[in-house]
Image 1: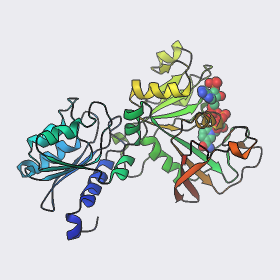
Image 2 (image 1 turned 90 degrees about the horizontal axis):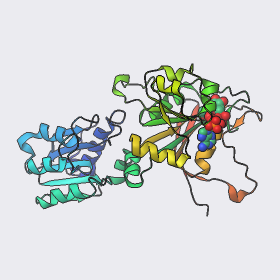
Image 3 (image 1 turned 90 degrees about the vertical axis):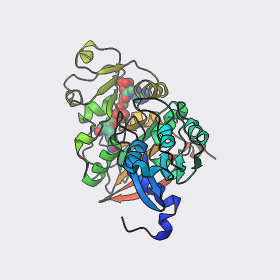
Image 4 (image 1 turned 120 degrees about the vertical axis):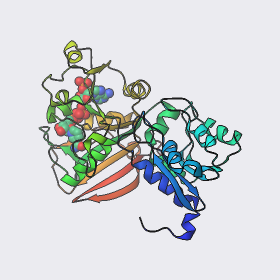
Length: 366
Ligand SMILES: NC(=O)c1ccc[n+]([C@@H]2O[C@H](COP(=O)([O-])OP(=O)(O)OC[C@H]3O[C@@H](n4cnc5c(N)ncnc54)[C@H](OP(=O)(O)O)[C@@H]3O)[C@@H](O)[C@H]2O)c1
């Protein structure tokens, strides 16, 4: 990072941005907890910083306060998420800030978690600490789309990943689909898996690809520091073979299937067949899975889209043509323009020879 200017040292945005960058260091390891960063500043000087590295370990504020020591008295704390107010595995951070006698706390995002919601701010204000909110809120929200959505709606944030050819095809008629995109795009998918609490796929993808859907390589990150996503297979007719590779790697597998003793014997978590919206609720509320990545074929992708359950589509497009007998990315039978599903394009990135589009479904047609 380049040396900050004098103006930046006295700008709330500058310090909150630092706190956001710190929070991001926990992006692969804090789940199901949120990513949070904190910096403590006095007279334009950084005196403490920290981020939440992992569930069960201290929160960002605790690390930052430890570093600042007695010097925290009279300082300003920048926190990306409202300090917690409840006794969980660690004592409340709002109280730690009060005890340290900071003068001011600046918060990017309020916490919709019913155990916190506004209570963190109340504790600070009741102790006479000045609180300011709304600094870099939008950027800070991107750290925790899943956590924020789950806390306020009970549902996880769902990303749908699709890799397609220029002619919108995702597999050959035979089911063969390796590979449409190049290695850089495939490496990018590992990032989205690594920030997810679960990767969901349909049984036909497992039968066709014998895929494992875990995180195998992430540049610059040690695999041991990644909390792997759970892999979830939707298999309502109990077709999953016991020889499937996905069942024989150490990460957790969940299968939505009529109960099978032989899966229980392998330690697989089984979920009763249920509609997709109910499944998402179960994952969020019973398993603390707040970010879901759907990596399936067109059948399941279409079901998620048609039921309005996708928050974001991550579409990789490769400069290749697979022809009209190859499988389309979306199976719906539309006959009129009025039925089309539109998206808002929020980002375009070139990854080697491929491009990645990030798209938000527009739920209501105008
Ligand atoms: N290019 C890509 O990004 C990409 C990604 C993944 C896969 N693929 C390719 O896609 C092909 C497989 O695609 P596919 O469309 O045949 O299968 P799929 O979407 O992977 O799986 C479909 C199956 O999911 C099960 N399912 C469970 N709950 C469902 C629900 N609520 N709605 C719909 N389905 C549900 C159904 O089987 P039950 O009724 O038996 O439960 C259904 O047959 C493979 O060739 C694979 O290589 C491509």
